[in-house]
Image (cartoon, rainbow, N blue to C red):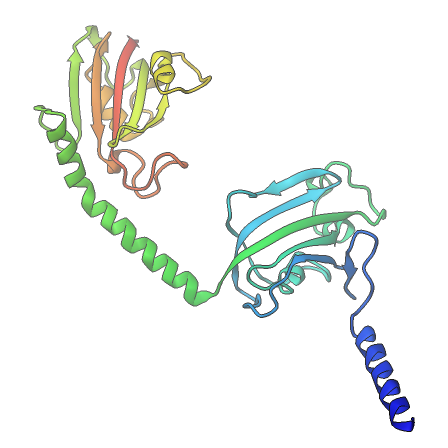
Length: 306
């Protein structure tokens, strides 16, 4: 009887000890509050995975919401969204990130008043009122943690890939020219201007304002931009601006390939321009449609030369 009592008492003590170490109870929305005032709620937690440390780069999806309005979101487009640094105040977003492991999904509530101390009033989101205990919520799905070694490797891999693309570009253009039975020779910069209709009137030159219809494609035929309604319809594109595009030659308001390719054309001229990437968007590319080191093919029609 005595032994049974002692075992029962030990079990009860252990249960009380465990309960005390669970930390504060969550509020009605499931958020815990740290001593710093940071509110946190883990939706998915991977305690055995790598934990975030100072200076790490974090990759994943995050949205920032205040009073029902989304201030930032890359949901659906995971990317590197921050480097972990010292916070300006207790209970900041870096303290939140340092709680996370790779693969975690969590929501954090950060004091809007604390943030407001470091920003101008006009920089705070609409609807913010001081001393109302308002929170800005960070919804974070952390997919990858990148330390200095990881970052260096990614950069090295990226540069190797870019060098490979750059080296392959000349052969890709030659193959395109052969496949399309193009007999015109490239100019000194490696660009092809294939005039299909000569046009009439004065030639476009430096200082001329030129209006142009165009359709731009990659070498594989993928359309990335056009102001020709007929082309847009053929490609199944909805909407768009189908007015001639006007620019002045020599003002560098267009890519170098256009400056070279449009110069010398007359009103009514139709031509195809094959532009190497160093005369287009080069190592950076443009948006999601034009990758780095992409040669471009433009079909152009000159509407006017003034």
